[in-house]
Image (cartoon, rainbow, N blue to C red; front, side):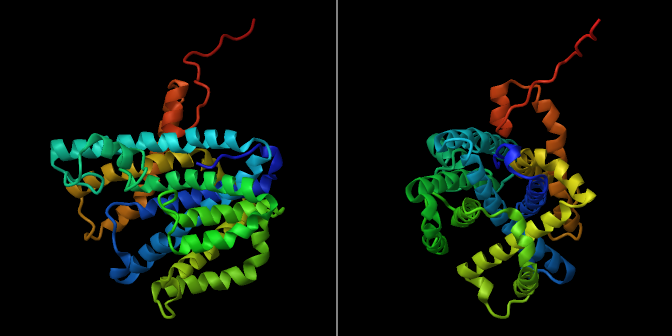
Length: 366
């Protein structure tokens, strides 16, 4: 999802900080996509507090944090590779696997509809079944909604990288001057159909500009005296709105900015502990986990509804919490199997290829 430049340009703590951000943010983003889309604010007590904090605060803010880190790394990568090469690498590493998993998801949801009569958000039989329309919208996500809505983030991440690279080519060292313009475009959602989630472009651009001017990701520790009180305000205001500030698009960007700083700061603190080292080890599985989670969770939800209960049942909280971790485990288990596949197939599935492991160990030297 995020192409990392040569490790030599990033110190060990920052590298681990980035890995932790990826793992934690991907897990929180998965919670936003757990079937079905529940309005947690309409619930009471613990369910309401946990649901709103996990999905509306931490889950949605994780998009901004990952976009910011992606922009920071994009500038690092640009030091080693030309923009055209980066664009082509991101095409194969981000967009191609998105297309693959959209295709898989759509095929499974169509099979569920036509064979089992199960209607899903991805396909309920009521929309157009024209082949070209399905390919353009559901699979390629040129417009409309993709078959797997959660993968729209990857499409916009790829498009935002192209936008930032283009702006850098035009403005060079004055790229920071474009931040207010992109901010306004983001507030008014005026970047469609190039980017459907303009906040991704805004935060990616901010991360890129920070690195362009020599800023590292460890600077967040110096903002702790401000970021922590603001974090408390964001949590309280989201749960029990009093000022209405976060209800506006500007307030939404403010909330995401605060939580991005906090996420980077927490990751930095963890990066200096053994727990952080443990969490960082799972970074190599985050992209595949994100690619497959929508499909895995959708299948789990169909099985859960038939055997346990629906979203109004008290047991749903168990499903909500556990489903992202099950998807992550599926990615971990699938990774070594995928490594046996031909290189083009590996790229289609997870955006990169690893050396195919030998089926038989090499003979010991005489």
